Each structure stands twice: as structure tokens, then as C-alpha cells.
Length: 379
View 1 (cartoon, one colour):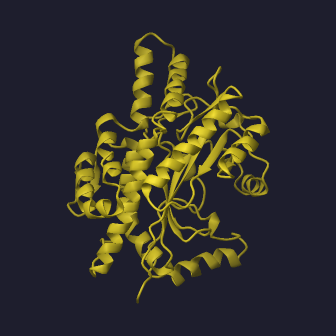
View 2 (cartoon, rainbow, N blue to C red):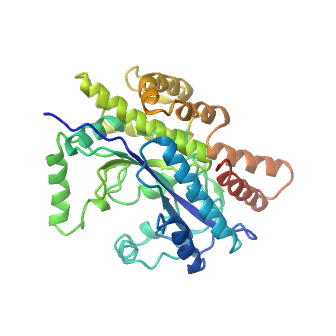
View 3 (cartoon, one colour):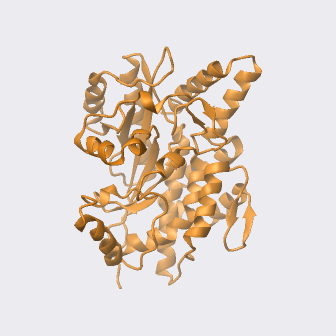
């Protein structure tokens, strides 16, 4: 079957938490004027999220990673500037170190009212943020084929993005606690392996025809064919605290999809592995981030994430060069060297404790760190 070559455009969505600069706690009821002004200054690229203490930004459809970085930097700056005027600040982290979900209010939007009513406490606990990367892939059959193959790399992407080690004032021992919350919802986790787009659509239609779903936008897999855009949407990431880390991982996603498409042109494909094995790596990424290695399924052994990153960079070298983003994706090495946001949050916490701070004071130090890091290197 002749498939249409993907455009490989890119779009990035990020979700942030809003905190009070004085208390460093979440703001459960921010002024409505903040959202209005963010929308005005961003030309409608900033929107409310499920909880009122959250805010979402989305880049335009970008032709390359450089455009996406510039647009994302602009959107972060808009949120920072507008919220500063109200004594608030955004933090790009997938959980707040000590915020309580029971104290949050959800946004008064019909679809969020419906979500809260349907999912009850499982939805109301969603005090979590993530990053989504859309890559243009207009052919439906190709979207499904690339989704099947891309599943293998999802744990690697999560391991490199972890930013949620704390939950309600506790060090959870996980680098990505976010997914333990999100996985309580239905239609989450790794996507199924589908033989074709019609097979995928038949499965969706079963739920739609039964009245369980309005459409495929209510499918929240780690990777999905977007129901709104002609893209493949990678959703497994924790939100990255620093802009450069976010761009590096978006670039890796883009290059991996081009690499898998290039394999197809050569009548090759990445091996498809079972959910059983892929989920083991997904759990390891949640638990350890980049610390303890992932299972190399071809070798059948645990390999350090640093080594896996080098192998992946070699696989996508041609693609990064062709897409003009070699420098950005090589930023993955920096993540390995200094750790993800989760590691740096934990380091700030431990340093504060060792300096004599109480646990409450140490957690506040983490929020201070996140405010600073979220605003870093936006030029």
C-alpha cells in the first residue's frame, strides 16, 4: 500500500501548576483575569486545564524544532509575566511537592464537569501535569504502523522526563509518581497493537456506539492517533522543568518517528514486543527514571539508560541531521549528566534538610527551585 509521506510538523503542549509566590502553595482559585490576559497575549494559545490551579500552553503547528522552541519559550514567558502581576508563578513539574488534591477546584467547563461526574475521585485526584508532543503524520495507516513501533521507546522518553517525585508532602520513592495517578483512569497506559487503522477505528466505534465515549479524544493512552489533528501524539512525558530538556525530548520524538518511517521505506520495521515486557520498562522508568537502567528487549538484560541514549542517538543521527536538530537532541546527554527534574528536586530537598530545614521548609525550597528553573533560558 502506498502511504503518504508524513509532514513531520511538530507541536508541543505543556501543563503548569500555579503557585502563590508568598506561600509557595497551589492557588486553587486564581483570578479569572489571568486566563483572559494569557489568552490575549498568546493569541488564544493558552487555556485552562481540568483544575483551576493548572494552566496549559500549546505551540502553533511548527515546521521544525527551532520554531517550536521559540514558540514554547514565548508561551512560558507570557504565563510567567501575567501571573507575576498577580503575585503568582507557574512551575513546570508534574506534581506539586506538597499541594493537596482535596483542596483544588476544577475549571467550570462543560467537558470538565462531565469528566468529574463520570470519573468521580479518580478524576478529582488529577493534580498532575504532562507534556504532549504532536508530530504531523497525515496518513491514517502510517499513524497506526508508527504507533505500534514507537511503543518500544515510550519508557525511554518517560525516564528522561521525570519530574514528579513528591506527592502531598511525601517523597514517594518514585521519579514519576504522576502515572500512578493517571493510570487510575480507563483507556490509559500503553496503546494496543493494531494491524490497521480500520481495526483501530472498529475498537473505538464499539465504545462510541455503546454510548461510553463521545469520540476518540477520551482515549488517553501514552501514545495515540490524535482525534483532533492529523498527528501522532506522544503523551507519556512528565512535563520538563527546563525548556531545553523539553525541546530535547520533543526533538527525540520527532527523530524517532522519522527513523521508523525511514525503516519502512527500506522494507524494515522495529520489532513489536508484548505489553508484558514493555510495561516492565514503563514501571522501571516510573520508579527509577534514568538511575537503574531499562531492559534491552533484544539482549534480554538491563542496560544503563546512558548507554541506551547513546545507541538511540546513533540510530537517529541521519534523521537529526536531516531535520536540523542535532544540537537539540544531543541535549539528552545533559539530562543524563545532571539528572532529570525529579533528581534535581530531590537534591534541593536533601540539601535543605542537611542545612537544618524542617521537612515543610525543605519542600518550600523545592518549589522555589522549580519557579526559578521553569523561567530559565527562555531566550
